[in-house]
Image (cartoon, rainbow, N blue to C red; front, side, top):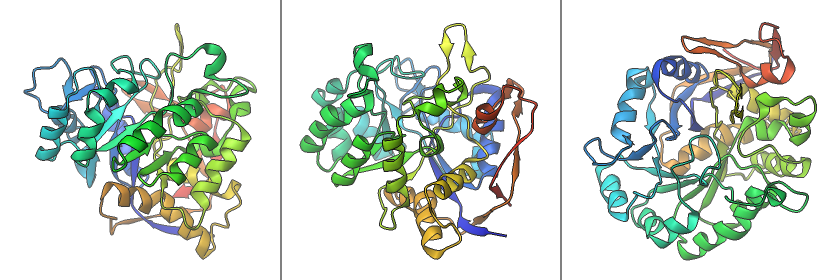
Amino acid sequence: MIQIKLPKWYDLHAHFRQGAVLPALIDDHLKMGCAGILAMPNTKPPVAKVFENDDLPYMSIEAYHAMLNDAGGEAFNEIIIPLYLTKDTTPAMIEQGAKSGLLRACKYYPPHGTTGAEHSCSFDYFLEKGVFKALEENNVVLCVHGEEHAMRPEDYFSRKTNAEEEFYREQMPRVIEKHSKLRIVAEHLTTKVGADLVQQADNMTASITPQHLLYTMGHLLQGLKYHLYCMPLVKFEEDRQALRDAVTAPENSKFFAGTDSAPHMKKMTACGCAAGCYTGGIAPQLYAEAFELAGVDMPSSQGREAFTKFLCLNGAAFYGLAVPEETFTLVKEEQIVSKLQTSEGDIIPLPLGMNTDDPDEVISMPWKII
């Protein structure tokens, strides 16, 4: 039996929402060996102010941190909550938040580009208002949802380009040139264009999800597997191969795990399909499966080292987090995948949604955690 002992890891991009569903989502992350999380701020209202007494109509980092702790998050070693960048974000807010120790990262969303992104502004707005300069000067990480906004539908996803490629060709190079010491994470990277830029830029790293290592646009469209619908969309084989090459390279120090796990009680709605794949509880198992499909010999020392760097070491190093002494173990043994039952409704994990329209049918995956 193949067993891989690993230090506990940080999921450096995940959604936990708010309310009664929180304890179940946090528990799923703890069960998969997570030592800490970077919790996305697109709540309702968004986490767009640092301090609770700030006179702005948003949730604060202080309040959301307390909410996560009360729901079981105190068991994590670290919780990082990025500040959602809005029209009300100022350089002074960045400086004050950084000095307090509460503000460690900020999140850029393309306006209306994904779930809860309606409060954002254009990339140029933050560049011109000095917000990115303040991040650079105060050593605050910029987490980027790297897609161009307000594109023509013909260009948003075409044979020649797509929203992510356009963003990393046109927008990000301007920021890198102007703010060369700004620490940037290209979150949930999906394209070869994006991966190439990350490898070339000294101040950039990237998080990658399980689904973008496992699947392509063909998997989404063949039979309309809507549980795979996420933003950014899965792309093409060339893109998936570029991501696989990046994360499995022995010298990889820039690419790390960020699941973008997003719970939805109802994926199909009256207004369309909710964006996001739920991989809570099973992400290391899915990443291990992806590494094997990429041709990595997981039992070998080289294979284990590459996987450990991606899952456990690179992200922690970038964010300055201690690698835990506590460990967990992955075993090459089938694990049954079941829906997550919560007081708010059932959540269908991605593998179950990919394989059946019957949420009560039993399916398995090739790796499990013991």
